[in-house]
Image (cartoon, rainbow, N blue to C red):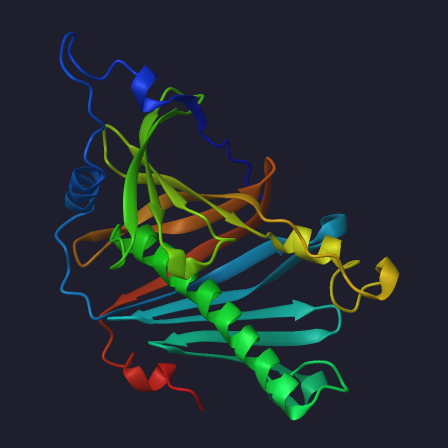
Length: 301
């Protein structure tokens, strides 16, 4: 996997000499910075939908690398779908997570499940019907918060468009070891849940291109390490109940830009945490406003 160096925050805004002497210091307008970045990305397409797909690689505890295919779909105003297919030690598995307005659903396909398995029906074996329904509602609410955060990050990654209801804040300057300076913009929304926190965008001050994004999340390495190893692996955890992995700062790097219908899209996206790369996505196909991507794709079967 590639090795990328994250930006280091060099100064808060109040300590950065951005304004003339004697002038009253005021933070730059984050919406103005985003508007300049959208302009630099090319003429805004009349977007109805977006579909991206390509090869995905991730690293599990022990250094085991796994490969598969990742596909993201977006349909205005608030539809999002993430499909991941990977070959694991115990067989091929495909997960599809979907946000369809206020509805969320997930399918997992694997031979061990006898085909398709619909999520949000689990719980402890001896639950009452009422307890099982409460459990289902909690799981569905958690899944919705997670997908809302993913959808919002996608809107920022590919269109630099903050979703309605989000709060923007100028967070200062960051500087990379190669001397590139970036404006930091924090984007937050209570609907993403407390664990997600704010998404921070790093925008090159000269080109206005999105260089990096950071947010609070859980990497696959941390998730499976906390639970004793990857599915089907030899790992174990003590006490009968797995510990909950702690969120950490995830850095998302954007490179290898490609122009589609006059708009620039990144085609290599790399994720890292604690200074180590844990996932890479090489985007091979970018389809904008495909007539085949309709609301039917996002509807719960």
